[in-house]
Image (cartoon, rainbow, N blue to C red; front, side, top):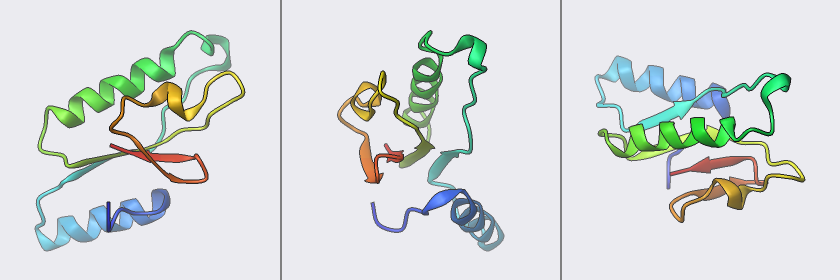
Length: 95
């Protein structure tokens, strides 16, 4: 999708500039989903990502941007449902 921000800073700047112009928001960006090390490996990050995805699809948003960090146990394909596109180096996805 053309025009999507690269990174948090650019996303925040684009959002603020759009707000000041009076633009209707069309992209939802999750700044962080942090899971305590005591609770990793329980599928919590996938559950959180899926909840955000469901919210975005049920609203007016055309895109969802979430930073994900795959590990040896969890790859980008574990997070996808066919609507997520890798954007750069397997680190960012957009719905």
